[in-house]
Length: 272
Image 1 (cartoon, rainbow, N blue to C red):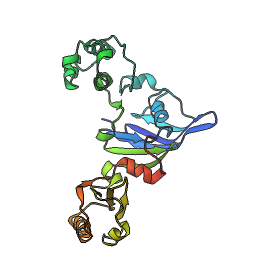
Image 2 (cartoon, rainbow, N blue to C red):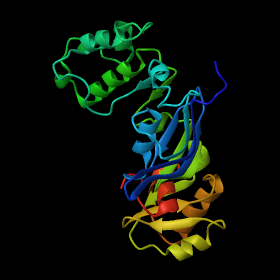
Image 3 (spheres, rainbow, N blue to C red):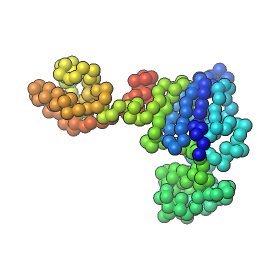
Image 4 (tube, one colour):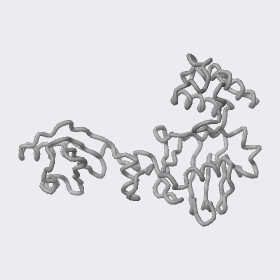
C-alpha cells in the first residue's frame, strides 16, 4: 500500500463569482482512518468534497486523492474511490438486491452482492423496491453501493461517530482538527438538576480553579473542567449542595461535544 495520504489538500480556494466558498483550506486524511469534516451550512464542506471527488475544479491550491489529481486523473481514480450518495441516485422501483447486482457489473472485482446485503442488514429486504425502504435502509443500501467495487477511499455521509480524525471547517477554512478526544476533552462535564436560580458564584468558589458553572435551561446545571471530572470535583459539588440545602438530581458525567467546541470557536451552531 502506498505511503501517500488518502487525501491531501493544500491552500484550496474555490470562488463562486463574488463569494469565496473555500478560502485557503488545508487538510490531510491518512489511509486506514476515518476523517470527518464538520461545519455549519455554507462552511465549504460540500464544495471541498466535490472537488476531491472531481465534480468541481479548484480556483487555487492543490488537491491530491490517493496521490492523483481528481480532475486530470479522474479515469484512474474512478475505480479506486467510492461515493455514498446522501439522497437519490437510485431508481425508486429498483429492488435492493437487483440494484447491487447492477452496480457490481461496473467493477472488475466486486464484492459479492448477496454477502454485502447481509453485511448491511438488508437480507430481509432484498426484493423490496427502493421507494419502500425506510430512510435508514436506503442509507445502508447507499453504503453497500459505495463499497461494492472494493475502493481504496470512500466518501461517506454522517461519519463523525466513527472518525479517527475530525476537521472542523468554517468560512472555508479549518478552525480546528484532531481526534475527537483531543478536541473535546475526556469526560469533562458534570450535569445535574436542581431548583432554578442557584448561586453559581458561590458554587464556583467551592470548585477547583478554572471550572465553569452554568444554568441552561432553567433548573439544569453544567459544571465543566478542562480535562476530566474526578471524584474531588463531584465531592465539591455535592458538598456545596448539601451545605446549602440543595437536592442535586440526575448527576451525569459527560464529554464535551463537538457542538460545544464549535460554539466556543465560532459562536455559532455546528449545523446552523
